[in-house]
Length: 323
Image (cartoon, rainbow, N blue to C red):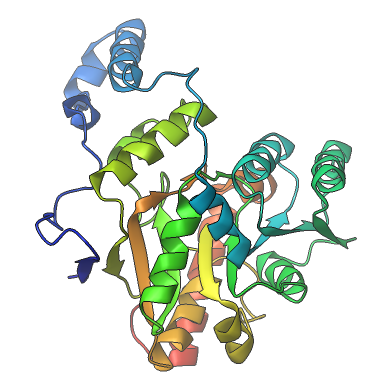
């Protein structure tokens, strides 16, 4: 079982999800009813569930970032590899513009083909003085991260997928975790899609929240405990992957034989071999839409094939029979 630790709340039950899940989040329409009921009734029930789940998350309320959180972002070099998907990319960069004002932002345009994508990147970069790396042809996530990291100057690296939305309170928690224990090498926040760090309510409402509602949810998580709540993991998901820059450089970054899927798993094995911890910060939150770029280019079958190739390669490299 993962090890859980809270820096200031020893009475907090570590087995209870940090968010207060609404009872409706667990409601599912039984398969026999799905077969028996008309489609319009099924859609109506889903709409009702959505209304129940979103009623406590107003769409119009905006959130201010504390100066402590603003200053914490100054310790971060945030590398954002981008390969098209301009709509979610715009949303990601807008959240960084608002909530990572002191961070060093490095955008790697990894062979995007759409003019709109390049315009989004150039617009945000020109407005904020962000760094850009342009690849004429797509080299893959690992190479893009490496290219961005080579320009980084801050103590902590964050490799951030372009289909994410950051929230006002994530940087302080990550910085405190790294400063609390020098043996923590890698950290990652809670999220909404596709890994052990996914929270059920966020997964249910992944496509429906606007950015204000995402921040509302993040604030509720933080209200559970103001100090970081950490869980030791064997690997941290790559959608928002925080690592000490010195450790990244020592290990040589991602394995170039893994261009995208599975690169964080293989890297975490090397991190563990060096004696470092990898932790999930449960009350930090970054929203993740999941697979937006790759689903459009290679589809779900292509994604699964790459995952399988990565699993085989990592097993052979590290002489393991399972991940």
